[in-house]
Image (cartoon, rainbow, N blue to C red; front, side, top):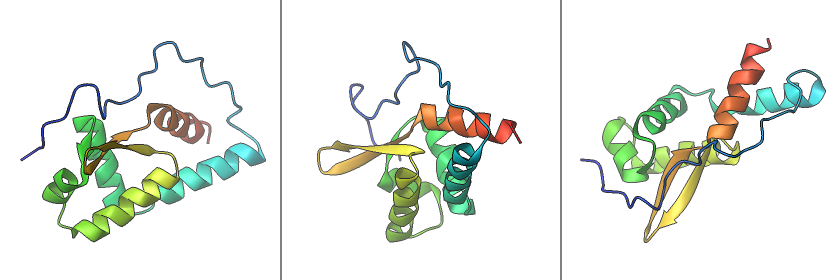
Length: 116
């Protein structure tokens, strides 16, 4: 069962008012960025976590564990990889961490993949 989330916490960052990403989608820096992002998505469990977070907008680690056939410690490791790559963020919600997709990073990933 999904945990109730406070409306003011764990909400994904919206793109409203954000300047468009004008970084180039080609060149060495963009290639390194693409490699970092795709490496973070290089495990099926991390792809599943991303899909889950996109669908739910935000949830705590326990909710993810309930959805995947993985131990809590394994899910936590996958969340750490995604967070270090900047694809997700984790906001402290009392004793728990609430995770959500970082929309700018997801848009950047789409642009970089689209430039191949």
